[in-house]
Length: 114
Length: 112
Image (cartoon, rainbow over the protein chains, first blue to last red):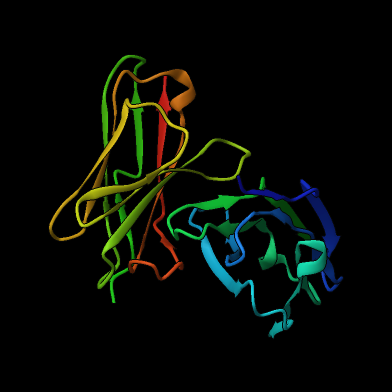
């Protein structure tokens, strides 16, 4: 069975602060993919990043960066210099080896105040 | 390139009724997955369709059923609606075994 845990249910920061969203996962598969999605109030899930289990390199995309540590089964997401437009619910997810089922964490609601 | 579309946007049904939700996959995608997202929770996998057949199912009862058509669009049918079926239903399309799923805007179902 797979499981994704996002311990932070809600985070509130002031604009320009850095913020890290935590994600811990469990899986018995040796090959798997991890994802982060953003869900703005409109409801649509917006894909942010995919990482496979063999690639532990950290990745940076503009103000976003991701830290994948297989040893601790964590895939954390950092937003640098947060902006009000970053306010949304963020989901971490894991896809199984069969490639059909995404298992989502409970989500972290990020509120960025001006 | 056309993204994933879903209809209707919102729907209100009464307990015991039946409902059909529709999804058109992104251009070029041949696989469709459905998810249920209750308020304040993460999406839960319902099932996936590929080549018009069910390819994996989550922990949902048989009253949740689906179809995929030759043009890769899909329907989600829910019979005997219950109050707990109130949720946002998300459709995602992908290429077979590509692992990356692209989501539609969802259909918000309210059961009264």
